[in-house]
Image (tube, rainbow, N blue to C red; front, side):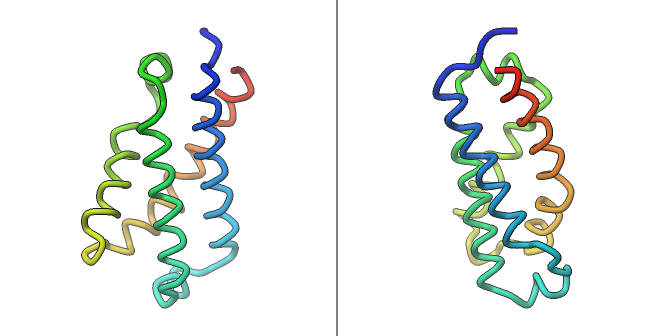
Amino acid sequence: MRKMEKNDDLYIGHILEAIGKIEGYLGQTSRDDFFRNNLLIDGVARELGIIGEATNCLSQSFKEEHTKIPYRPMIAMRNYLIHEYFGVDDEVVWKTCKEDLPKLKVTLSIFRSEG
């Protein structure tokens, strides 16, 4: 396994930081409370956008070596949030946070510790 490039480590750090912020924002928030809180939805959406942007900045060599990370969906989520801003489905945002981000956090933390 190649050593992670310096910029890749920086971008992985940004992704993990954004995940941490989302976890902090959501805390023990219920699904119903999430859907009623536009400020919370907006904050989470911003951090998901950061995750997508940082993912897009990862080097091609990192992406080729770490094929288990869903790069395209992560970048697509950023594009969805930016370009469909009035049509964003909050259910998609909620599910992404609750189902996808915990797995991504574990995977990236492992790569970072190996890097």
